[in-house]
Length: 130
Length: 254
Image (cartoon, rainbow over all chains, first blue to last red; front, side):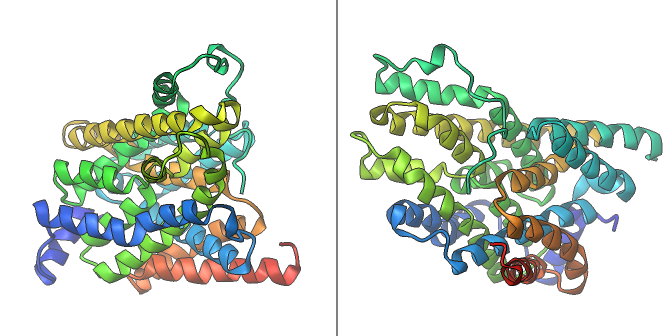
């Protein structure tokens, strides 16, 4: 998939109205944040030690949200937005795998993994890119 | 769910371990300074990646920065802006944001006892709560036990404030850079978000179910995106997470 997110946006905008902009978008973002996101933080502080973080329901929620973010990770790499789409899939995947490998093998430092992925992407693109 | 001890450079002994005679204001300033350490720099760069992504999605600079501040949780932001940009269902996007937000609940539950103290008023809890996201939480978890209880709230609000400022600056920088740097630099910015998410997920994973959920969610994501665009993340989360729990439970390993 080489089309950029922006092209997809424009196509979607043409199909289903337009992307909300300006203050409308700011208002939508505020409402969504206050209604669905921020309450988890408040709830956590209110419940404090009274919630059973070892309950099965809680563990399931944790696993679901973990899988959701993992799916987001692969979506961002396999169906990338913008300039990342100009990098061959092989290079993108290789950069992620090298970052992951360095993180796991060399002291589990997030910074090492992130820097490695960036370096491999640049190197791979200069060798294999157009 | 405790952060790996080796998550980042240990807060080794130094000048800042002496908290004798420190005022709340100084505790706050020391917290702000955390933004200048390795986790702060990674967060700045990840926010730059988000800024580039937001620009690409058609967001204005104002709304990109505003979204960073109002959510202060990159997974929720990227899910939502991706959903809005692809013209997907806003309801599905909102539901996905709700699910990613649940990740913050155990973090605040675990941080709450550490924040207790004389200066922990209700509104300070609200402010501190907004800063709970992977990086600030890990730093709080790591540093607060070394801080006298009456200074912890100020110190944590300092950590949060510094990290929020770093992400706002990062968003702005990423947004501006995305249009004017070589394509390969923009590509690197856009790669920072997924690699940082992946490694943070692994760093904060506790137990086999979490690790299995990462693998299953990752592999389910792309085919589900092709089959059910707009609902792919929700489906991957529910299917992958449920299988992970089921497998681990039926093995009786937790």
